[in-house]
Every structure is written in C-alpha cells, then in structure tokens.
Length: 328
Image 1 (tube, rainbow, N blue to C red):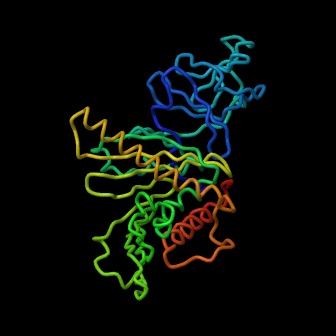
Image 2 (cartoon, rainbow, N blue to C red):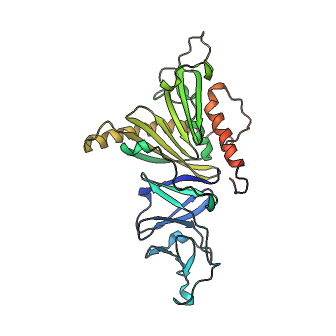
Image 3 (tube, rainbow, N blue to C red):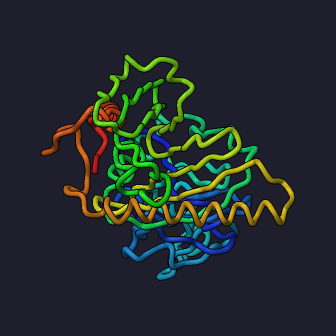
C-alpha cells in the first residue's frame, strides 16, 4: 500500500441510507454508514468493549449502535454513551476505535489511508468524466491490487489475451511505448503494429508526434482511464482488499447519446463489452505469481513493459517516502 493517499474503496450506491455496511479494505474490517446528513462515516469494525462487529448494529440519530451492549459510536470512532453506565455518565476517553476520513463524489467513495495530519482536502478524479453518463460493475480478483493495476498498464498482452476483442489485428510489435509522468499521473501512448518480420520496434524517443496516439492514464494510488475517444472512455478503480484480493470497479463512460432510453441501452451494451474484456484479463492475471508485484522480482521485462516499470518505480518511491506507516 502507498500511505497517505485517497483510495477509491466503494461505489456510493452500495452504501444505503439506513443500514451499516461491513467491508474489508487494506486488510482491515471496516464499518461504514451514513449520518443524519447523508455523510459517509467509517470506523474500525470491532467494538472496543468486547470485540463484536459494529456493522451488525444499527444507526441511531446518525450514530452507530453496537449490537452487543448498545454502545453508541460517532464518526470519529469515539464512544458517546454506554447504556450500562447510564445516559448521564460520559464515556471514558479511552473508549474509542480508529476512524477514517472519507470523501464522496461522482458516485464514488474515497477513504484516506495514512496520517490524518497529512490529509489533503480532496482526492483526484478525471473531472471531465462528470459530463459523461456511465454504466458500471464490479469484479473480485484473487490478486493484490498492484497486479490488477499492472494489467491495465500492459500494452504487450493485447493481441494474445484479447484476440477476439480489443486485440484484434495481430498487432504484436510494440513501438515504445512513450510514458509521461506528471506528479501522480502516468500517461502512456500506445503504438502497436503488425510484425512484418523486418521492422525493429521504435524506442520511445524515436516516436514523433506521440501525443496524437491512442493513450491511457493512471493516477496514483488506484484509478485509471482508457481514453478511447473524446466521447467514450473506460474507467477503473482498483480497490485493495488484502494481500491476495482486490476489487475492480469498471465504468463505461460515454457522451454520444443523451436520449434516456437510447443512452441507457448504449451504456448497457458498453458494460457488457467491458465485462467480456475484463474477464479475458482476469483468466490470466489470477495465475501470476507472486500475487503482489514489487520493483524487483524474478522477471525479465522488455521495452514494451515501460508503463509497468514506471508504475513500480514511482509506487516504491511513494512507499519509501512514508516509512513510518504500516504497509501491506
């Protein structure tokens, strides 16, 4: 995990108004709920009293009630009231659990993982997508989230894993790719062509006018977009569950059609296509070992792996810049 980052952890529609939700993220069980103002609250899903799951409780006036002994928790993780001690007796300051800051926008919920005093005001999102409509789905993968991310940075696999979909045309020879990093945003420009048996792949610095090429973008720590065209995009959030599991949220964005019925039909077809493509990836990626990537592993990378190399290098830099935060 890269510490001190905003991570997409959930879609807004999954967290209902009057029901707590238990999720596992960063190898930790978490309890989420909405308060009286519909704001997202998140605390550790383990009562400080007897260790019961707080997400099994209920929401009382925007606070979370433990199902075992009725302790009332606020969004900061502090116990406000212990029924057995009476309503008029304040709960000890030591009665609390860890809390997490949250942010909600664009139908997504972010969670800050790291030091509270380093929290930035608002997480990054591809804001231009706010003008698009979308359809979405999620999929569970039995790999560390870093492996799932690397798959979407991999331009070499397309003609082999996706022969029947986006890899049609047998474009096995990879020029470059050109990789540009601007702070936490990695943009990579793709130029795959058919191999005529004579051509030698161009090195990244030999590709002219690369900005005109098809490109994809990844923003740390866990969101990505495929810039298919000005009017069609694919978006993904790679959500860390634990060392060997992740959840991928895929969205198909478009702004070609605005008539409600046609728009929803087009979005639905786009979603079905995205599912087929993602499942082609999944079939292969879940067999990779180890399940978690690192800067140096028992691999022999090639020039076409440049986006993955850049991702690993910067990911490692971000982790090493925050050595005091627990990693997984």
